Length: 172
Image 1 (cartoon, rainbow, N blue to C red):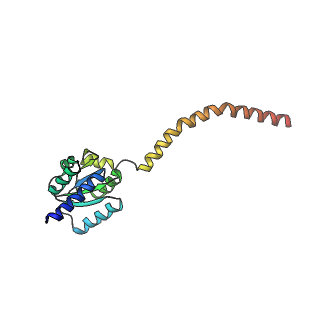
Image 2: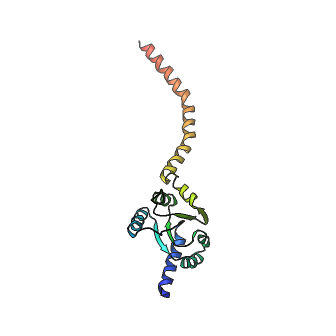
Image 3: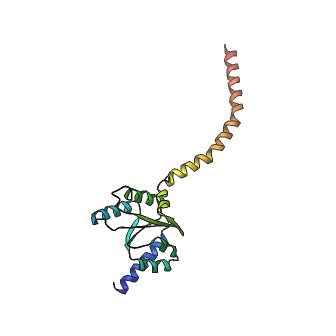
């Protein structure tokens, strides 16, 4: 490979490592080109960039981007997935790494600067989406206010019911 081409690849990898919070390492050996293309399309639809990389170029890019811990999840023939949404990326990868006819094997991940095992990456897929988590948080924050409202309005509602019954009794 020419030196200019290598430096361009290193720069691109360094940019991806610094821009994306989540990096996942997978194998790609034994996968047909068609299956690998389908995997890339599925990942791209979820906002994941998936690239086969050379380990030495990744090491140099990791040093440039101060994310040397990515080297802990790289071993042998490697393809890296770069994503900003770790949960969505993990869900797509789980679909392709499941069962006997699995397309890939997940080796590990890097979330921020924390190295994750393959099991931890797959556990991310079990988390609800961001929107669901926000809705759950909003419901939890609203519950005490709702209970306070009911507690304060109950005596007024009772008084209203008594007065309404008295009005109906006098009207008859």
